[in-house]
Length: 205
Image 1 (cartoon, rainbow, N blue to C red):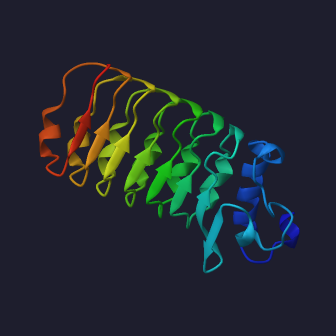
Image 2: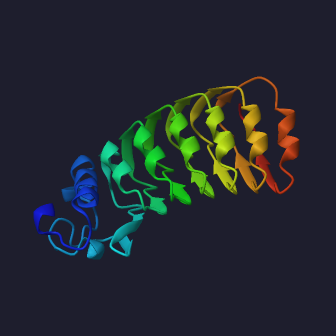
């Protein structure tokens, strides 16, 4: 299909094609124009700016399967919303290549494995929503690099270990929920640095 696409690069087109194929695109609720139109920016859920994919919005669209590593080739992506699907497997480390991202919502899926430390590369991120999955392992300390973050929701997973001290670096944070995990140890005193915080949920750990 990408041989006929003219409005975005072949690299970006192949990333979208990989997503379609790895998440049972033929079974999506809405797949208007996907792999059919030579104008990839007209495909359902895609928004482009200057012939680059900047928004990928496929929430509640019956995606089933893994997020492919090729997603890391959408390097101008600013908004990624794949919530409320049936995504499985791990978050690919290549998400760390998406340096323009300001918003990630992968909530209400069946993702497993660890939160990749490469998430700390996303210095422009304002919302990180990974709640209601099956993520395990520790909260990576690299999260301390997300200094623009305003909302961090990791609740209802299987995360363990301690809350990293680096969370105190997130001085723009307004809402933090880690409820319903297996976290242990002390609440780090550095949470006291979060002077913009208006919501803090740490119950059921």
